[in-house]
Amino acid sequence: MILAMMAATALVVATILIHYEVLRFTSDKLRHLRIPPRQRILVVMLAVFAAHTVEVWLYALAYFLSIEAFGLGGFGGQPVAGFEDSLYFSAVTYTSLGLGDYYPTRNLRLIAGVEALNGLVLIGWSASFTYLVMETYWPLHRRRRRAPASEEPAAAAIE
View 1 (cartoon, helix red, strand yellow):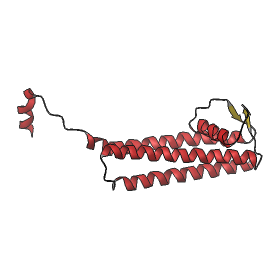
View 2 (cartoon, one colour):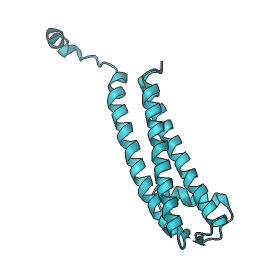
View 3 (cartoon, helix red, strand yellow):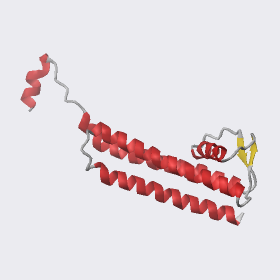
View 4 (cartoon, helix red, strand yellow):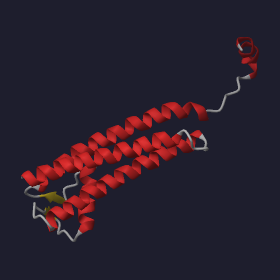
């Protein structure tokens, strides 16, 4: 159990660092991109998705190594064929979907529980970061609406 706790802690620290660096790099480079605001928001979405993908793969590698090299547990349910099944389980766990066709046994249960909590926190972090970026760039891509002909004199008087 101690090895599983150490692995879970290392995975949380590693994924937080990955997430932080991706968001920091994206934030830093975003203002220097010479692209329209809409594309900047798309860049943020792609960067966030890439960060989550790397984090899911990191947990999948940990599951695979925990089973194959360290014997910390395994998966029940469907027969496990290899790394692909660890990757699938990691994606389902990270997103808190939890389909149940695979389930962790023994010490892997702790790592899976921590992954679900970690995924939830990191997805929330991504959502708040995306919101802040959209708050900055969303107003820049709005087109100025032309007032109807009946309102134009009033609008001209205001300006």
